[in-house]
Image (cartoon, rainbow, N blue to C red; front, side, top):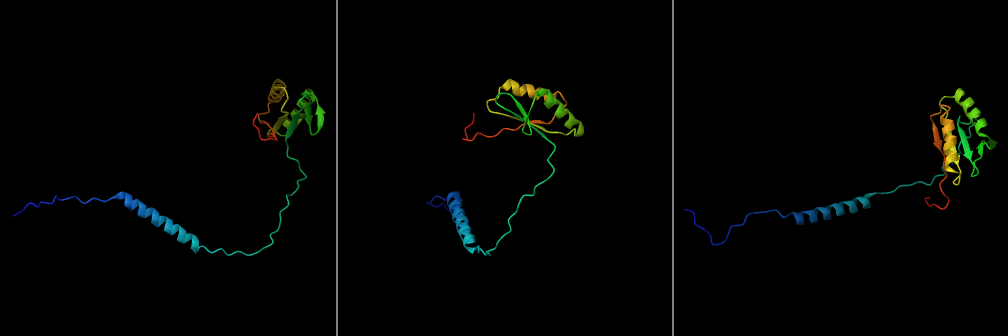
Length: 141
């Protein structure tokens, strides 16, 4: 025979918040113990220094500096647009994978830069990039 109890029967349940607290404590404890177990063994050494090798062969590329007045310079020599086209055309015939870098001054007129870009692209050169120096003060313009 089953007799009713005056005390209500409660269902068992697992509290998850204290379990999370215990797990974080164990994690922190294991991390602290693992850090103290690490022994650093070092030796004083004089390591050799490296020196960059200098290549006698210049890579086959053309860098075109465009001054603020719109003048063109290739390898430090001032050239006209026609001379630039001839130079690039000759080097492109020798190497069809020739990269050309345009390096305009910050105050070069936009139209002049695009005109030079169009004339170089008109020769069939597909690898034309802009070589831009970051501002010295770090400001974005």
